[in-house]
Length: 479
Image (cartoon, rainbow, N blue to C red; front, side):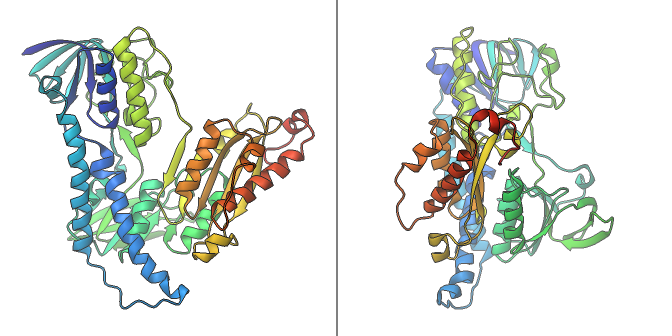
């Protein structure tokens, strides 16, 4: 067996792994990366980039549907499913190619292929062909889709988002299990491309929303277009030829069986940590098997091991993975001089239409016990000028600020162009702006951002209702 001694071993070549390798290498550490699967990122191969390609095609189809509302009447709509998926795969492969070029730019001696498992706190074995003794280790193994137990082993009709972007053609029908970001994005896109789609959720959640008013607006808006079935659980599924017979049970206990070409499971992703031998490291593991770690440093306990990206199960987003990897790599490279890294304002976007976005502190977080009480401002986009001009007047924005300081804390929304509004508001949170400072900023006319100003004015008025922070602290959130 080949033996290596290195300063830093990085397990995984996704976004977090590549960032960690570069950061550790920049510290002058002898660093290697280990990969058991495809080089590259979930985002480029089966995540954010191919899904946005599918959504772009769906948006083009949808514009034909809404054009008559402007007095524009296009001809008969025809969707070429094979052409749609061919473009998705072609552009996806282009993005993957860029990532592969990046990984392959690492020196060949720094790249090791195979499955890594711990045999001790400082030792790894890779596919029984290489033993690595590493002074520090970064775990960046990513995540995989979760399959519900009742859907495991059913047959080829049970798929995940990882499978969708390898389709040669659009299917005739799809049942989507889950109304998180992935389920909603793919479900709406497929529906707009002519696929019969039904979405099932065990509870009543939509994407990452926690504000009850925004959640209600999102439910009303999306239900007007999509077949959304909340409070419904999957009972069983059976592969019958080229279809899946799916049986579900609603809140009243009624069971319904329907046939779909595919059942797309979008119930979350789990860290890829099985079979890694973490029990030999001495690390303290949480209930879900993830090592306990400091989210500021990515350090596992007080050890020489760091964990980054989807593997730590914190926020499965590319931007977060890149930051995690940089922090973990820098700290592994200069160990034992471990320092907190830059953690940016949380920002999450679902590219549904309308967009769904959350940023800063969520409504749920702000309502937790012991938190400062906060004021709320809101705006409906139903009568917002520019939104009505574009026939995109749907949704709601709710903004939050701290009593006393008037510091802007965060927002939740569903609305037109929310992906852009969310960035502006996230920057305001990170810059520690107050609501009066935000209202001093320029607002052009007519733009959707004028809706932000309306919400901020409402927020300012509600902040002013509290004569001082002590009085506000005795009130309920949002009063």
